[in-house]
Image (cartoon, rainbow over all chains, first blue to last red; front, side, top):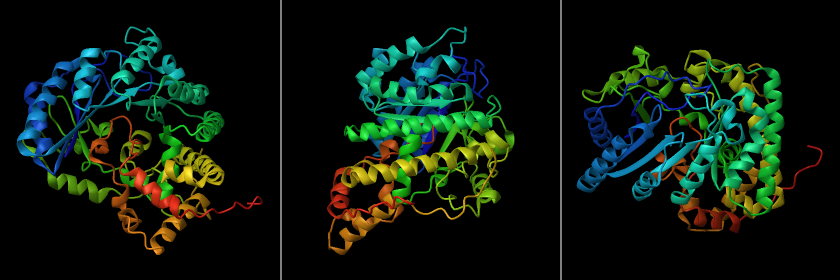
Length: 353
Length: 87
C-alpha cells in the first residue's frame, strides 16, 4: 500500500497559503519503521511519499527508510516505489545522488515567477534565487523531476509567465493547481484574470506542440488526455484507500487536509488500519448533490474530498470556486485540444492518447 | 462565482476522433493488446513508479506505459474530423 509520511511538522519556509501548522514535531525511527512495515503489509506493492512540513529537515530518516525498504523489497520480492515533495531549499548533491540511486521521484514545490509572492523563508527572506539554483541541481540528477506550483490569487498575474519559466529551466513536467483553503480569498475578478492567464498558457502549449516539444502541463494536458481515455478525475480521490498520510506520531488519516480531526482517524502504524472506519468513510463518499445533473460531472474533480473539505468543510460538498475554475479549465483545455487535433492528429495522439 | 451545472455539453471532437481511430484499428484486425483493452480503465493505469502520488498535488497522473506502441496503433487508424467553423 501507499503511505505519505509526514516526517516532521516543521518547515524552514512560511508560505502564505499553507494550511499546515508548523511545530517542532518529528517522526521517531520507531514510527518510521512501523510505517514502512505497514506499507509492505498490504497489496503487491509498497509505496512511500516523503512529506512534511519540509521532509529534508529529516534527511537521515529518508536515508534510513530507503535502506530499510530496499532491503525489505529484496527479501520479500514486493516492489518498492518512493517519491518526495520538497521546497528544495535543502537539496544537496549527496542527497540527490542517493535519491537518483533509489529512483526517488521528486516534486519540487516551486511557484516559478510567483515564488517570492507567497513562498518565503521563515525569516521573511525571498526564496526564488535559492530554489532556482536548487532546481538546476535537481534536474541534473533527476531530469524527470516535476515542478509543483500552487497559485494563490495574488500570484495569478504570473501564471503563464511561470509556466514558460519552468519550461525554460528544463522541467518537462509541471503541475499547476490553485490554492484552496481558509488562507486564500478568491474573487470573481481573480478568476477573470486567471482565465486570461490560462488562455495565454494554452497558446504557449500550442507553440510548443508546433515545435514538437514534449512538455506536460498537468492542469490543461490532463483534462485533454483524461477526456480521450475516458478517465474520471473525480475517481482519483480515494479517501483512506489509495494513499494514507501518517503523522509524526504514527496516526493514519484519509488525506492530508483531515489531519488533526479525530473523527477521521483511521488507525495508527502500531495497531494497523481500522478497516471498518475506512469502509464507513467510503460509504459516506458521494458525488456532490449539486453536481449530479452536470454534464461535466465525470470531467472535473468535484469528488476530491480533500479540496471539498478545504473549501466547504464537507468532503461531499463542492465549492463555487472549484466549480467555476473547473468549468473554465475544461473549456480552455477542450479548445486547445480541438486546435491541436486539427493541426496534427498523429502528433496529437502521440502526445495525449 | 457560483455552482452552475453544465448542460448540453458535447464530447469534444478530438476525443471522438481518437476513439474512432481506436475503433478503426480494432475493426482492421490489429492484434495490438492496447486495442483489446481500449475502454477499460486498466489501459490508463499508471505504472507502479508513478502510483505513489506526490502529496500536495493530485494532478500528476501521466503515464508513460508503453506509449510508443499505443501511439503506433492509434496513428495507424487515425480519423480526422474537420471542425465546422460555425460551431
